[in-house]
Image (cartoon, rainbow, N blue to C red; front, side, top):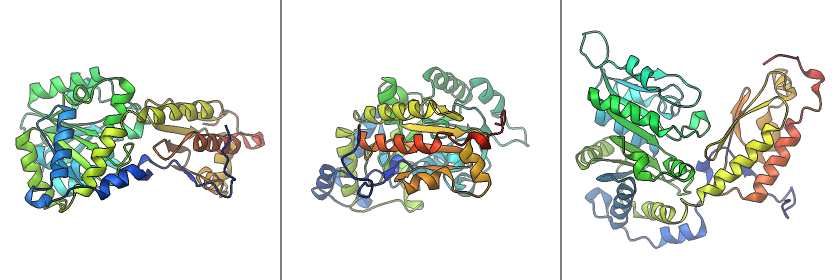
Length: 369
């Protein structure tokens, strides 16, 4: 299927992230019509409605609206730890790589990093890394963090059995369990499990409204009521308390009612893109569980060889043809979202297939990876 737009008139297909999605006209109308108060005084009715709705969906007692997922995660770290404590998380986690070093800077914690290709925290690895007895030398493990779906592993859904096993270990040792569930909505749609089931093992959960759901701003931290009351004070300390935030909350409420089920379309398009890329020689694709497609050029790919010579990279070549993605070196990421329709997907597949087709394989070094 080809778009009716000419190449010159085509809006760039932006695959950098689902955060680039823009409010729909109906969402903008909901924002304009929002009833607002002052959330600092806890009397913004739309914020209160959003918090109650998300807590209900995740089957927890309470929720707190915050500006970003990073703030939600950092508040959770402060809730569960003291300076000098240790936090176990995956070595590719958002908390590690995309929050500007906030965990040690703001909470004074040591991050104990466990590697795996698929974002899974294996229960035996967690048990071996966990330090729960005071010995005068080691930082004490107070928190384990999961990310589900795991962005760095290509939007992979962490198997619930793995999470349940680690949760049982944490309960036995008095260790809290936090979920960075920025795209938990995607995990629910792709797995068929309810949000409540996915959230059940965790002490606290952060969820994001401004990725696949398409809201302009906002995340929520969810947990027990007493924890969320403490989190409210921490939000103020970190500068995240907002006033007439109901306009933003209205976008979130609209997204929850209208944009969760449609995530299946993003997942379908991600599968189509991954299948097309997987057919290209010297391209290794991580099969997507959700809306994120990660792929890697093998060492013999002509574009990678050309990049080493100082020629334009794949990102630069694709951008020149109206397809924007993220990546460096040999690794790249493309994220499907609300603003990428079938025509946009077709254009992205056409451009990437042409650019990546190794017509000039005279550069290739056989066997190099």
